[in-house]
Image (cartoon, rainbow over all chains, first blue to last red; front, side, top):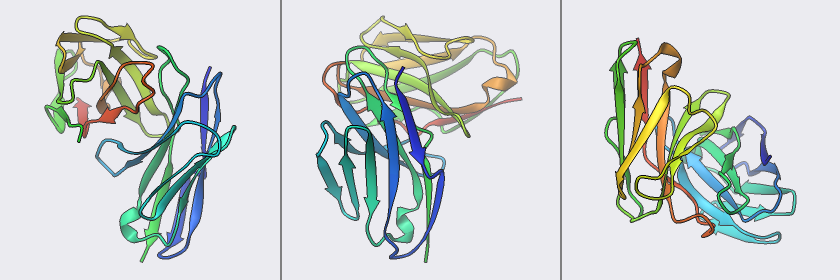
Length: 110
Length: 114
């Protein structure tokens, strides 16, 4: 069974203080790893897909990287508007369901 | 951009009522999904559908049913609502299995069963 573990559960940063969120996974064969952002009371918003180890994707202050066992979401010089819960999910192909982590709740303090 | 629209943002129903949650997507996606999201438990898959009139059980189908009569519409039905079904319900859609494309979500329905 596919498993996803995200750490930390919660992270509080000062504005401008860069950090990383971790997503460790166990799958039989990774076909895609997805990062989402979720604001309170709203649905997850898709950010990135990573397909193979060594791949990187960037969007504004966010950069996602992938190894064979984990993915990192690096946040550079975060702003208060980056505050949200960040979800990681893995897909192992075919009719297998997508497995989601519980998420990391990020709070950026002005 | 993919647009997944859920019919209600907030809904309050009574125990024993039959409840319908509706979801419409505008990207001609083959797959559609229903999840519930609870604090500390994350997203749990209730049902999914990979084609019109086709449905598959997810991890927690008990007490729920679904209907997909048109490609763009996927309905979740609570046959006889109970208080433990109070939750945030999220609908998602995606391209076919094997395309390795992400799911896209609606904004959710916050359902309270009294």
